[in-house]
Amino acid sequence: MRWVLPDYIQDILPDEATRLESLRRRLLDEFRGRGYQLVIPPLIEHLDALTIGVGQDLRLRTYQLVDQISGRTLGVRADMTPQVTRIDSHLLNREGVSRLCYCGSVLHTRPSSSAATREPLQLGAELYGHAGIEADLEILRLLDGVMRLAGVPATRIDMGHVGLFHALADRAALGNAAREEAFGLLQGKDVPGLRELLAQADPPAREALLALPGLYGGVETLDAAASRLPRIPEVVAALADLRRLAGELADLPLGFDLADLRGYHYHSGLVFAAYGGGAPVALALGGRYDRVAEAFGRARPAIGFSLDLRELARCLPMAERAGAILAPAAKEPALADEIARLRGRGEIVVDALPGHDGTWEDAGCDRRMVKREGRWTVVALHEKE
Image (cartoon, rainbow, N blue to C red; front, side, top):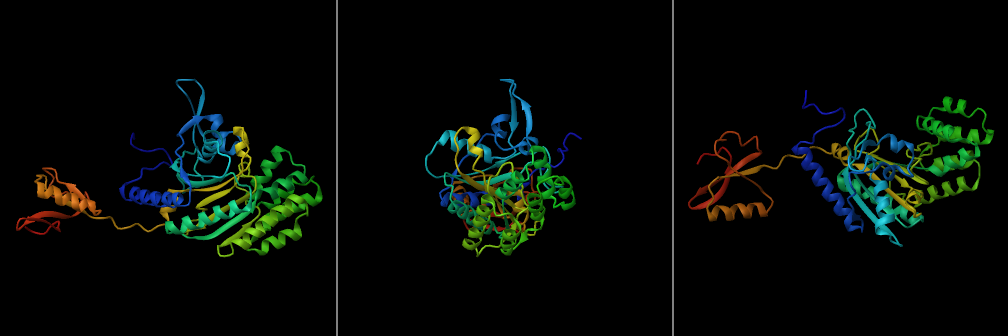
């Protein structure tokens, strides 16, 4: 059937579209109030520009097509963060701190889960130019505040650190292919598979990597990690960063999962995932990605987060639809003035068209305008004259 959409692609109907737009405006206004400036990157770019510096995993999620003008391969964006990084690095070219935000559709070759869409509405905020932990604190507090504002407060924010994996993988002398496989096994907490993969690795490094899947829980996880992982500088520094964040953000619902390495191609340090609203998957993902800007010729510290506005909205109860007022088709000055007054105070006023009596409830009308004693007034839709 011609009108059937592709798998995992959906229309957004009026009630959901209204809810999404209201949510988008509130969250972007919150970003603006905190100094995050809105940018709108293009839907398509040259493929290399979209995927440079962020790893093979993003390339596999990116739709590709041939530009009919240049003949070059284009990509439909699967993630807006690299685009925003390009804007910061090349177009704004600021020396100090830059705070940017964005919201727009992205397209994935495959859904992230059986319940997900391939066309998320990605909203996010990025902070560039500050390598210190102060930026990490700002972004985590911003994420918590945004979820509260949306009406879906975070019930858990799990944190990890990609530096732990990189340090231990280096210690185990894992090549690129083995790292890829180890990453997948850690994500699935497949300890037997990981043990088999690391059979020939240096024993201390092997045991440290095998310990990661069991290192999750509350702040006590950091004490367990300090006792089970080697005291090499990278590990000590990563755990120190996580411990300081735990202390500074003690009022947030923090957790720790040191095997959660999602996006490790992309990130370089702190990573985090926020859960809430009863959703079975993370509603927001983020972390530090200091090396991505190097691909654009200008190394620059960076940290941020993004979420799918559609997933966030699904966690909210459906609001009652605002009723509309039906206005007569014939317009006289007094009627036009009253319609303008009603619309000015936020009412929805629908102009009647001839030949559609009895159908206006389908258009959302629950009231109508009638003239009584020389004045236009609003009554129930089916109230008699």
